[in-house]
Image 1 (cartoon, rainbow, N blue to C red):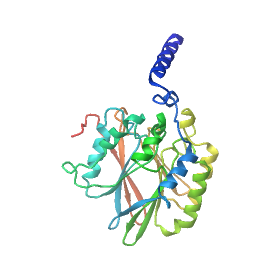
Image 2 (image 1 turned 30 degrees about the vertical axis):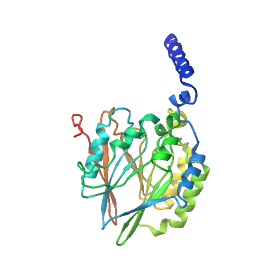
Image 3 (image 1 turned 180 degrees about the vertical axis):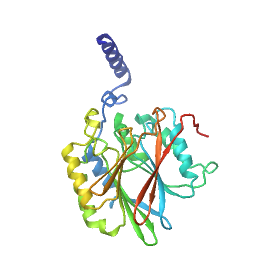
Image 4 (image 1 turned 90 degrees about the vertical axis):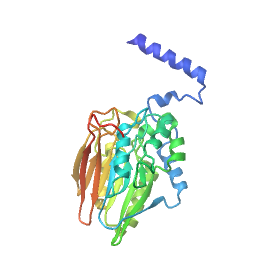
Length: 297
């Protein structure tokens, strides 16, 4: 075992010597690299002064699609199935992908191709909102993510004749909101929550999971999760959608529903996605399993 480790290390050193440090990010093999959450928040804020990503107009009650953890490497069968289902569903309003879009920085263009609108194959060109995951930071992936996709922290509205709902994307890709994002979130909700019917939070990391095995790309410190959960309860958040852990979990705490969606990666044993139905008095979830033998058409 020790000899194997030494051999792999020697190979890595040789590749680094040949490639140059600016081309090969060895640290990115094991953890996210590049700017931290404080810097990412500042850059997200600079992209849009008010952090608003847009408005989705609907007629009344509506439904949207959401999946997590595609981990695109070379194939995207399951994500393609998700994209086709969304873009051919007349009842849908938009889509959400909860982070870990790719496994490495070089696969971001493949990911974007997997979810693009095709006028021949698709009936509707719906918006898809992207959440930043820890794998999206590997090999300094934030550089491409912010250029190709956009900010990691933002909000958008779903507007209907009787009112509007609020959606907030949080950056938990390195296992913390950081002080600046936390301050912004608290101020924003305290000042604006009253203007919306429902508030739905979108994030990669599961607030309730306390296992730290994923190190700096892992989960939230328990103290931060407790404070955040307490605040979201006081602000009457309806739903928090999360990914990251590759399993399904659905629980309610302090009248806030916290739902973890299993991965949609081609490598996962039971890939799934979710349809979320939003109405005046409730938010319903409809789980969609992708059969093992289902192939992208």
